[in-house]
Length: 399
Image (tube, rainbow, N blue to C red; front, side):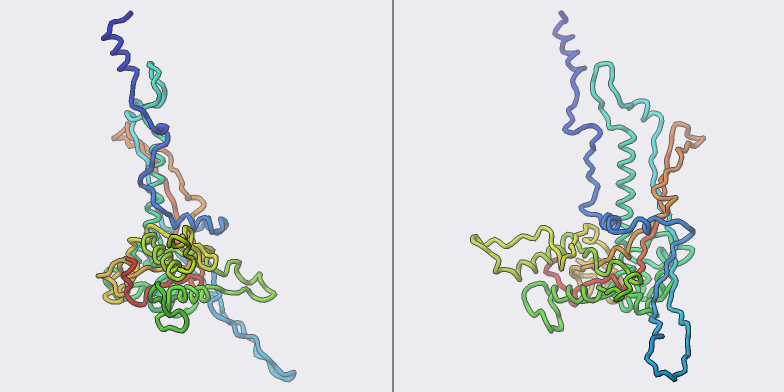
């Protein structure tokens, strides 16, 4: 029988820290509350989301031919072939992340069982590296979706390397042309190579509201939030051609309404409650709205919209966040009526999360790196099917 000291030594060697979860189940604390990118990918057609080629192109019928006419039997005809199609083209944006490790990390921290029979003490290296890389990659893509519009970074040939943000395709400016950024009131001039000022159908819809509490709803110059919502729904809904649906698109209505998680959803739920007090029962508790909708369209709170600096201030060409009461003339929650059949990320089929072979530098033979590339851009093939509802005057109650 061993001594007390040897028994204690054996005990020390055989005990270790406890894991509340499996070593392979790392709690990820840097994921977001919500991802708008996820809604886009779920709503889009994979045949459109994945493309190849040197650039991204699409055609839109932007002009009504207006060749139909009434006639008398002896009238002379003057047939014509008007050009109704407009071609759009945007470039790919090249996006990269990496996973790096060295020989010592693998050799000294290998998974498996040691001679004392202890269970694994570290997270599997492959899983750890991949989780860090995927989280970083999709967080960066989500940030880019709500970044400040900047012409040099997003539109100008030769310098553009950042994908279009939501503020480019859906904004509240005249003719919906974003500012160049950097404090300039000069408009971009072109979006996806075309000037929206020249094409009324290449502009998103706009509607303003004033207040979310009870008050005037119909016929008011400062409409209630619900009235503005209904106006926007009417503006972004398009019927199919009668008897010829094959020449019209499938989705004619918004698929999601995106708003800020902290401000917009709170304002909408307050409006529902304040206008439905008659639903109260014994105890004075208001009805709860855990998953609010409008006319069946889900209203999704997006964490990134809480701080997104992509709303124009109305002076100086400056963009601000919607809760910036000092920097914007119309601070308050915004609501993006979006049809994800026409607004979506498009990925290159050959460079969709493509893993390069592991590389080792000759000056550092123990260090290895694997790059993961993605070619993509955020494309909107129909801007008139997108819309934004924004405050007519500063609404500081909900921010």
